Amino acid sequence: MENNNYPLKIRDVEPELAEMLMKYFTGEHTGFVQVGPKGYFLPHRFKYEAFKIYTMEVRPTDVFVVSYPRSGTTWTQELVWMVANDLDYETANKIPLTERYPFLEICRFSVYVHPVMKKRFQEENSDCERKLKLLEYVTQSGVDQLEDMPSPRFVKTHLPLSLLPSTLLDSAKVIYVARDPRDVAVSFFHLNKSMRTQGYIGDFKTYWQFFIKDLHHWTPYFEHIKEAWEQRRNPNLLFLFYEELSKDLRAAVERVSKFFGKKFTEKQIADLCEHLSIENFKVNKSVNYDVMRELGILKAGAATFIRKGKAGGWRDYFDEEMTAEADKWIAKNLRDTDFRFPHMSQ
Ligand code: A3P
Image 1: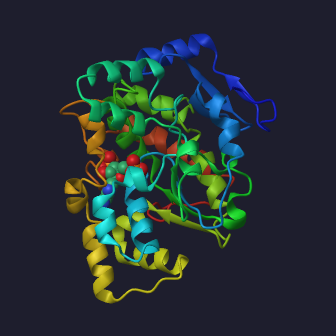
Image 2 (image 1 turned 90 degrees about the horizontal axis):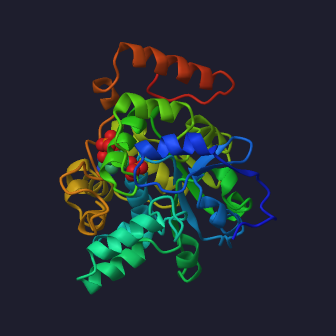
Image 3 (image 1 turned 180 degrees about the vertical axis):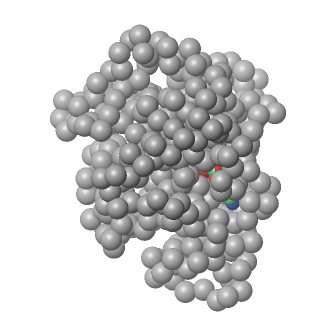
């Protein structure tokens, strides 16, 4: 149910605009909302979960990995989990990341699985009890799942800080990861095409317009980042960049270790970097979201969840006009902030 005590305004996206978007995103069936003064764009179902998420119990031992999608969340999650759990490879390899980290806003009315699509997946998997159970598992409420979880809990979310419990940073640890928005858009475009829950059918140029006009899930992109950036000196928040992990993973491991008060030997760090390499990630069943393909949520033969794994790949997708537009959009969004990407010369 919608809750009147929710402090932020949630408004429905105008029906004509929603209709137009749903023609491109064929996995969506009901429309969208924009939340709060920044207008965070989410599927309409968010309004039924917003209050529950905002008021969820935060435990001092909680660890949240927060990001805009496709910013290196999975990579960061595994890195953080390994460091916080003293390099417990055995458990990491046995228990999938999806079980180790409930996805907060995945829920019955979730961003990813519209009830219409869920019904379709249930029908398609109806001959296999195990898959039906798995489907239930991956679409269950993140908040409910977390309630029953022993501490320390690890949580994945793409929600910006302002939509998370206001007490989060008082006690819990937050690791935020940001990535060049051009690489994010290319990567998210592929995922939106691969995931039948999104079912994007347009081209990249059109997708990019939705992205920069804040008409795509979890946008506005820069507001998302800026909220976390403003907290970068908070001792409970660690701000990372995908490009930083990409350039010097070892240094990133050290930053994360320091954040958790852990110390590892050279050899342990080298082994962890090897474990976190893109080559190993691609074949690591614990992190590569194979379950989505098994259930038919990810299209057969489509781009995998762990894809190219490099920084700067956007250049292959942007023509001259888009590059200039991106430069302008980035510059405009950096005007009122001291946030800077380490790899860009602004
Ligand atoms: P690309 O699609 O550009 O390859 P998220 O986990 O937030 O969805 O981010 C996914 C992006 O991180 C994908 O980017 C994916 O390939 C990349 N990624 C995942 N694991 C990685 C790793 N071990 N090394 C480098 N990039 C990785």
